[in-house]
Image (cartoon, rainbow, N blue to C red):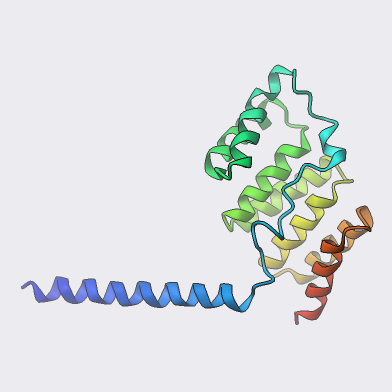
Length: 174
């Protein structure tokens, strides 16, 4: 009687080991892919900084979200950003930050939606275009990824990270 649960437990452990090993190999084979500290631009672009008024009562949720975001407590930050967007739906920084959070969570469809909204509200945000390029790439839409990377370069031609990313996209087969 005790043999069956032991066999099931053993099979589950083997399955977990296989899945974990595959995930590790994928990460190891694609070191140029999304890295938290290198690929996702989490800095606040100058164009977006101008629209934040720290003395505005509507920005209280935004301030809390920013603190959590900087501590990399993304789940909590996401909740505060969502509250902040309810009070200030025209703040492109909120949508940009939500996009980065969704990228961190590997939730690429929501990242695409948030980053597209950030770019709609602030068409000059190169960081949002760059992150959107990454999200499209992860979703398998290489054409859109390349278009967004080109847009990021047009918006910030001096950024070598954007140029490197575009080169990586062009090298990878469709």
